[in-house]
Image 1 (cartoon, rainbow, N blue to C red):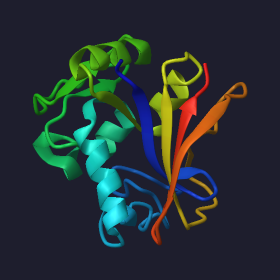
Image 2 (image 1 turned 120 degrees about the vertical axis):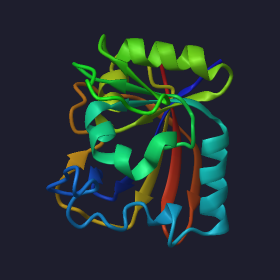
Image 3 (image 1 turned 180 degrees about the vertical axis):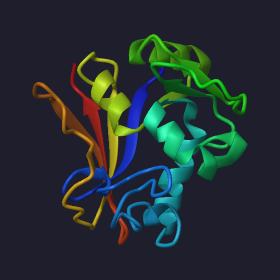
Image 4 (image 1 turned 90 degrees about the horizontal axis):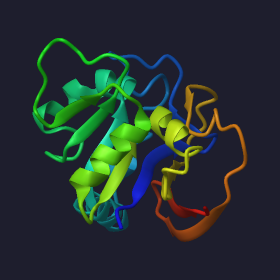
Amino acid sequence: MTLVTCDMSMSLDGYVTGPNDSRENPFGDGADTLHDWLFDAATDEDRALLQGGLEGTGAVVMGRVSFDKCVEMWGENGPTNGVPCYVVTHEAPTESHPSVYTFVTDGVASAIKQAKDTAGTKSVGLHGASVMQQGLPLGLVDELFVHVVPLLLGGGTPLFGSLDSAVTLERVDAVITPAATHLRFRVVK
């Protein structure tokens, strides 16, 4: 069974970007260390978690905002080195983009279905707060893997800010490193 997993770095106060995020400032003000567990501050445990996530991902679903802000950073291979990315958008861009990206204009459910068909036995990774906030209430998200960074941003993009009702979770794993507390939950359906 293909799992749909939201795998996001988050500040302790629940933000995935700081205030004033933009294409020029993709992670927002004060969020420079939000992803250090992936790079500068990574321990062997952090790297193992990252590697496991990359190897287990067969497709990615992201929102248009994430795509617009970060496509230049990732280059033509996308955020996970060539794994197909489905971008949820109201309107596909007119300019050409690397073939790793497919633009989906009929909603997050369609994008997740297409990604699951592509991923086979591997997982579908959700990239960005918006696609997770749309998919979770629809029952389309199986796991949340949150990397809580010791940082308070005080504003920005909240990961769980727009949920309309309670979601029951079961903790599956917790790994603590100096750079982040990695928490994995199964969504109870």
